[in-house]
Length: 198
Image 1 (tube, helix red, strand yellow):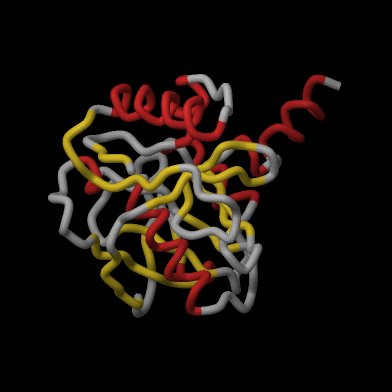
Image 2: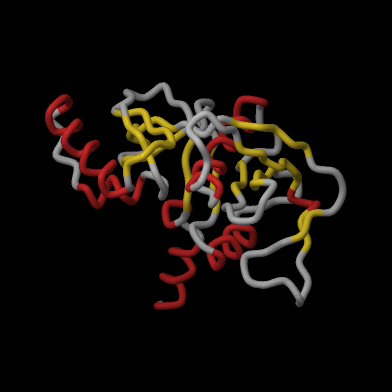
């Protein structure tokens, strides 16, 4: 019974880094090296599209569709960029390079450390401006690239710490929207690094 519960938890997208594109397509990736391994094992099919920063240090974000639109791919690339190591050190006006490839291009050998994979063949590359909006998706507070849901705040790179940003957002949500969202909920939704909020 315990093994079944563990297996169900591993396969539940809500335990990973996830969001829905503005076309309502689910995108799932890892929050850690271990989760990158699990996400690619449980959520990847050969025809699915993946995004990853051109530099090391980002989740592998897997679009759960065999035919994602250009908009789905761009939004996934932005989300991937915002939860990467590069986001923590870029200037507010900078863009981040993202690689785009297919599930059947992924490979792994024994010399690669946990969470690391190789990509065969050509990769499409795009530059994205990392900006997010705070909304509710599936009843959970999420920072996403774009949404038709009510936007509660806009998040960009800036000068505030993650904790300062969360405090500012919590006050905004309480004062403007009368939403008693805790700072911890906000901390779980937003990226790390220096941020700004509107």
